[in-house]
Length: 142
Length: 452
Image 1 (cartoon, helix red, strand yellow):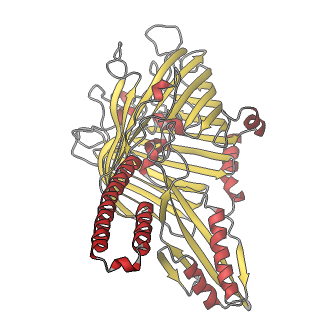
Image 2 (cartoon, rainbow over the protein chains, first blue to last red):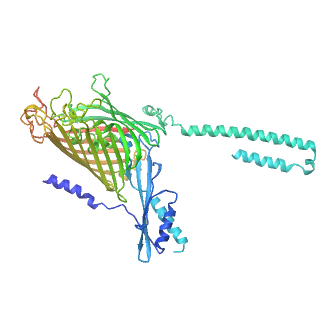
Image 3 (cartoon, helix red, strand yellow):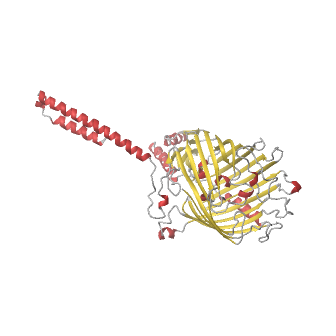
């Protein structure tokens, strides 16, 4: 009985977990202005999907050299890739947007070569994109 | 480029500096023409020289380093070239294990022992943008030509992938069977305890590799969710030539299939679907179903559930598996049901004072992990073999407490203490010759493992 209880407790642990933090930013600009500015802020990446009615767009993956060195020989052979998911919603007289970075890692080390593994997004990158949107909106005077 | 600019400026100075009056003079004109010719020759030779230098520099940047700069005795072993090029990566992992037990246990037939368990070179090749080759070659216990010929050499996996799109790709070769997560992530440096979970050895017969082909892919159904799948067809299960029935002591290990010739022309199917609602949580279900008898009238089916929960320094991982096997042995002595599970908690930590005390050994990449794991397995859930001599010998439980240190993520020193229990078995002893022996020794298991 105690075993079942312990297993249930451990399985229920994820109930304490929450979605990755996505700090939202509010602007007095119109939805249209924020939507266009957000798209422009990530214009160096390809857009994979954009649903304006839902206020969500997603970029394609962009592959970069991984930060982690592989193995005892510390080889620079790992790769990382990231994409942005930007959500823009109307909020009363203003508009709210949030930027989320999804990030994955690939290593040729052993069985990890079989697929990409999820990892924590880079908060600095996310903040930089969000700041770019905010700055451009400010330039527009709202 | 800088040289060209300097020459250009010098030319302008030379030309600009000539007295205007002399320009009319034919002799001066000739002199100037000669100077220009000389300058043109200089420019040409310098351009060639610069191009050569650029070529050499580019070639050097593309070359792999020939050593890792290690010096001094003991470290020279690492001062070897490794092969690393954009098209192919060669590497590997190795481990070394030792145990000090009160008696033997499932996988350790000696109470005290040293064992260089695995030396695993691997190769990854980018054949083209869409074609990838990956393989692990397993040399265990010194290989087959060790002095007592009790080692192994085999292919752990060897696959060729054709990447169509992220949600749908083709894979063929010697495949790691996607039943449970442990079989897919079995490398010693990845695991926090030395011994593999009992369920991942007896019920899921890891490391489990079969010849087959199929499809795999990844879908992103929500903004932060991820769904991975793998589905393959393979040769199916098969009894070893020497066996007439599934053996309780081997679990499903002696049902692993033929990698060359299918024994019954009846293909098996295997698949795993893993869903991660968001980073840090993954739950997966998997199954394999295949005939194992020569005339394909007896089947075995294996189901598994695995989970990974991560939050900060805490991880809870585990898997459970169940197997049903059509009765194979005469007299009802072969098992028809098996089950097992493990549940493991990991806590990663590194006291700050260690980084101050010895920054050379304790860096930001270092970590300790405290581990606790509970294992349970039963390879004869119906107790069909209970009355036989040495029957029902694999109803086992194990509690492992472990502490490991990773100076870097890919290298780990492990220290584990195991409490092994063997339940409900008949006619086993640790002393009577000819009878099965007990496998419930407790004690220390230590190891080191690293990717290289």
